[in-house]
Image (cartoon, rainbow, N blue to C red; front, side):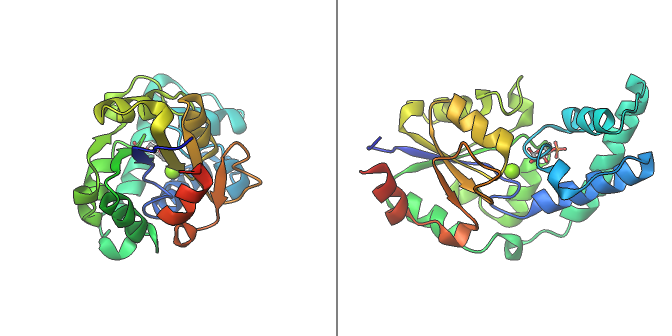
Length: 219
Ligand code: G6P
Ligand code: MG
């Protein structure tokens, strides 16, 4: 595809391991509700917004709740999650990701964050990575969650880059789908068996390099 101009990063599970905290917080809630939940089911929640994730869990457990109860449980999950993220520091960056972000910036490529999380801003602040991100799009700025491409398209738009010249980096199935639907090159972090639509899958961010990405894009 050549001439890449921007790389758009997901946050949870890409820059830091908050995907694990989301899982633990949902698991705690599912236990309270008596709904079985494992890591394989959790793959369906990655990248998916708070309310929608709760809907998926309820559907999975064949449980119906009133709107008021749903609000109560969504808030409760977020309280669990917030206790996990309160002590985040730059030590919680996933190994290799900062080096990759620096390589990109040093090559004159723009960067954006595209996170469906309403907690994205405090997390990136605590990780001290704001200086490596030219723009941030979070849940508050989009109407449609991943797998809809809106959040990635908005990131490209805020950088004034054509989506065809963007790379998206994601750990979630819904996220990779969103990147592909936006017409971008998708880098997946995790299992190739799960992230089947990604153009390039690495198990961990330590395996990412700007050189290798350029090679794959045949720049
Ligand atoms: C990200 C995570 C999801 C999470 C969503 C909403 O996309 O991958 O696991 O459900 O954000 O996060 P929030 O912090 O707003 O509940
Ligand atoms: Mg993620």
